Length: 279
Image (cartoon, rainbow, N blue to C red; front, side, top):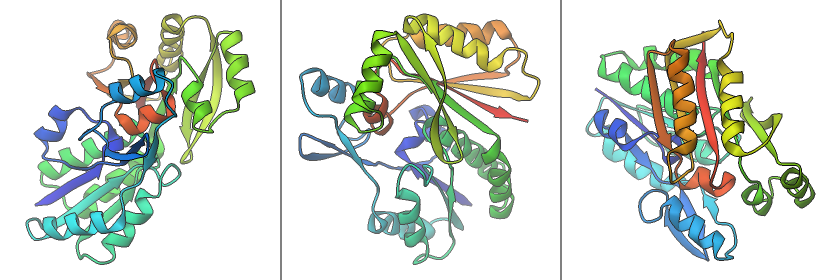
């Protein structure tokens, strides 16, 4: 049997993690000088309340090599192999730390997703489905190598104050975007985030325009599933995206998730992403 493990940044819904018995390593979240663990003792609502009250932006900590190694050792005693899928190495040193740990434990394989949130999660889900189907470690590694460059992860942001506070955009850029009601669309390309387009208007309109742009007249998409992820406490933005995908009618499955604390720390509330897979 092959055990699948991953980082909390995969943002897969709890029901899927439980269904496939996926072990999750929580990243650290530092709020007001205290260390918490993503999804364990801190939630996105806690971060939002802290920032709205005037608190400094929370920061994130990678999983350390010792924590990876301890869990890997325990799991290799119970399974034939452990396959760990990390948040992209361009976004965190988790992958580097997991690889250091894997060097100390036989039959542990580490994969760099080159992605984040449920772009990372789609690889985890594919690996878990393959392991459940009895595929070998070599077959699963080949599958992930094939899938990784075909992932299409993007998102639109309602506000830039979290990115500004986190040093990912300048105060001038944030101010200009707010004054002009501009909302950047960010794509994950080559293990990095790049602004590929800017939308104008309120975020509800922007989400509708963005999702239509992503799927309209596309003949290069793998239509097995599409994945919506957002950072909103309510359903409005996800509902807009969901209805557009349903009206399109081509996707066999539409999955939805809420981003965890690690992702939320950097993009804040009002962010919606769409993850697709190309053929």
